[in-house]
Length: 149
Ligand SMILES: [Cu+2]
Image 1: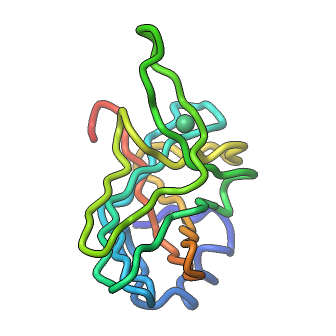
Image 2: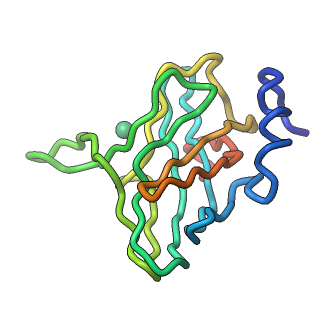
């Protein structure tokens, strides 16, 4: 059963067609799969991960991550700076034709901030990916506990 946060998921379900679920393909040929949100464990921000593959003929870039559950979304990269793990914003994630780019723990990720209500493991978060070539992809990302990735 899919937990309902509001009327919005039902509305989006009518609009997103084939891109429902944790996967989908943009009109320009970028496939997104294995989308998930890491359980924020009560915090108001959570990381979002997805695997992107470009089946189209042109390079595209993921330039924004948004969610109706979050006030703000951005793209981040984990870096190690003098032994400390840090996150820094990145303007976009380029996906060359034929390339597979993974947003995964310890690397690139989407950052959802201002989550309300805070989702927990077993919930579903709607996430919209925006691409430089103009496409958007709506995904239904399951929330996973960090110990159960
Ligand atoms: Cu981050």
